[in-house]
Length: 64
Image (cartoon, rainbow, N blue to C red):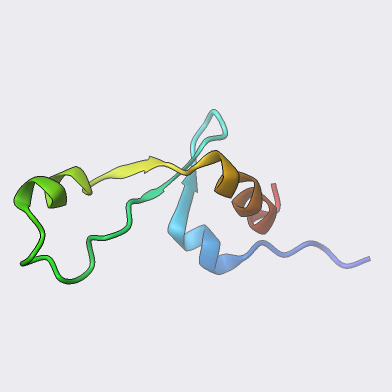
């Protein structure tokens, strides 16, 4: 049986921490920034842990 291949696109979008959590960039910081409040754009910076419902699907794509 062939080896499982990890989803390369997902590997570029998320990072797995040492404890196994999955962190990713928050959505909503790509366009239409002029109409968003500075407070909102500051809050969207940095990475956050992915929701539990998405984590299972992401781990499957990463082959973990």
